[in-house]
Structures are given as C-alpha cells and as structure tokens.
Length: 247
Image 1: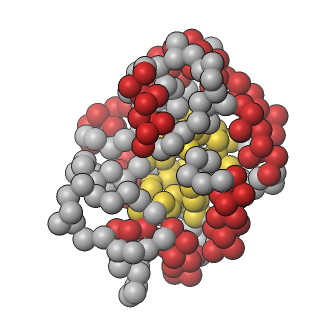
Image 2 (image 1 turned 180 degrees about the vertical axis):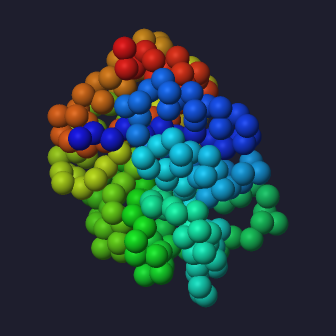
C-alpha cells in the first residue's frame, strides 16, 4: 500500500495546528506528516510532533545531525521517548546563517548510528539527493546509510520521470518516499537550480496545471511500484494543490 506524506513547516503553532486538522479532514489518503527543523522558526520539529500525532498514522520530525554533540549520550533521547516518537528523518543540515550558533562536524551517518544504538525502537529515515553528486556516488551514500541503520528514505523532489525511474529501479525493495514539489515561477526554478543544483527537463512547463499532472504521474508510479510519495507544497496553497492532485 502506498503511503502519502505531506511536509508542513512549523512557522506558528496555531497556524500549523489548523492546517494539520484541515488536511486530515479533507485528505484522508494522507497518512504521514513530516516536519522540517528550521532554525529561523521558534518551534523545533520534535515539539511540533505532538500537534500532528493525534491526526496522522505517522509523524516524522527532522533532525539535523550538525546540531548535536554526539560524544556523550544523545541529548534528545528522553524527549523522543517521552513524546512516543516512532520515526525520525535524519539529515546533515545546512550551516546556520547565525554563525554564533554552535554546530558540530557530524554527518548524517553518525547520527543514524547513535540513534539506532540508543533508540533501536525508532525507525530512522535518511535523505536522498539525486542532484548533489553522480548517480553512483549517491547510491553508494544510500548504501552507507542503510548499513548505518537507516530504515528508509525521503528524496529531494523529482522534476523528470526519467531520473525518477532510474532511482526507482536501483532502489527496488527499499522503503522510499519520492519527493514532489510544485515549481510555478522562474524564481522558484532558479532557487532549485542554484541552491540545490536540481535538474529540470529542457521543456519543463512552469504552469500550475503541468505541476499537478507531474504530481499525479509520480503518484501513479509510486502505486505501481508499491512505494510512497512526499508532497512539499512550498510557496503554494497546499489545500488547493492537494485538492487538484487528488481530483
């Protein structure tokens, strides 16, 4: 059975709580919520977890490996156990804009190993970025994460079926949530190309309807391969977007 996840940013507790409830009521096919940990907002992902837990089968807070001192006991162990967190998504994280903020030279592999050792009951997901390196290097990194104890993966968004199909073939049997993100402006496309080095097909159409069709196509592929999808409705009304995708 295909699992469908929605990513929601915890900008404000009240706003997030209302959006969670509305998505739960209007789109029962969405069974998973994941929450990125963005330092510019006051709510950390593991605190926002409690807002989604009553409404979704699975709520997955993101943890940035560089934020934690891993030389001693993992500092969030008690919090994760107390909140009954079942799954997390580990990423390395981007360096904070505030350079006075303490960060550590940890990779996601190190944090995955620590959590698997201290909290073996938690499913640890990791990231796949098809744009940061060659296909072979990224697949090697995926294997390293599996060996470290990763249970499954969430990917950066795909904008081309061809690249998605290659990854799906190579990762057959591995639990994967394929990323879907609407890109409807030149500014948004430039962001993905410059910051994330994303690859768009030459004829990529920024029209809203094209983005809806792309999402529907990826969802169909996920159902055919018994894998999962991961919606990231950035800079767009998530309710309208989901309504059109599921139409």
